[in-house]
Image 1 (tube, rainbow, N blue to C red):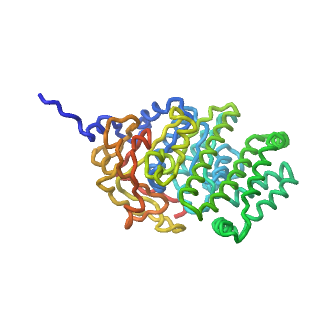
Image 2: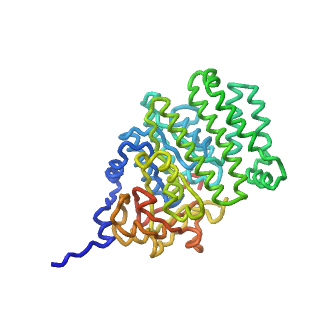
Length: 427
């Protein structure tokens, strides 16, 4: 009898794990984690309920079964640190909604949504009966908080070094021009005002040089307090460079941002390890940050990203990159930057995309390991869709599709045929 080669879709059907909306859906992923220090959980959009819900379910298991120490997200450091204090039973916020109160910058729904709210309450409850050395934290990797981070550095210095606080206030004052970081960057690039790159770097270097002195003065939780201040000083330096770079090439500003996120991630890993912790971190961010840029069009534009830099910096054996895709459904997104979130219909994926390929498997919802896969289409360039905080279906091909080699971009993927919009708290 003739022997017929299995089709690519047959191979996907044979290797995929169909999802049943239960914790066992993630057994294969947890087996793949092994002893890795970094698990990166992506999302194809910033507004899909299932992506948030699944990441939360995976993270709960990583914390409970694999002893992960921290959740690090695509959010600003000071905003997330307020949440961190809440889940660690510090600060004065009465509930998770109050703890999310500093997320006021567009797009608020990325973190002010019902799925994040539920996860934060779970994390606080989980920490309630843990020793101090076993508390799991919640941290931000991003660097848009130029002014709030500079204020946080000054607040810290006022507690440990009043003289340096006066100097820091003077150094940071030149940034504070109508509190518009983009205007600062524009005017600095055009020479309409002095830029602050030297001042913010001097502030960071001075803070780092006096690390041991400040921690000796600070008493209880000195290491955490200093780490928070140091990371805020890093944010100020990175944000100052970023807002100037916005008026240069896109690759320059993108690379600054993702480099900062990776530096923060590695700094958090070292901080946890210095406290005798495993230093294992789960990351929540968009696929475009967490998939390896070298396997996408991004590399052609000279861009790198978190996934690439983590693989290069920590090694392939220490990082697991997981993507999430959807074929159609609804998404919470704005029509234009700064606009209100809307529940919007997502067009069925193009026929020449990975999303359509997965849809044609008729598996509906599944997990698939793609590292070293024999499935030929997953190793070849194909279109992949990315929806951020904006969704523009009228120009979807130009605005939301790019070429990728999925098996090199990620180690594994979760796919959902039809997904639903995340529910913002502020709607």
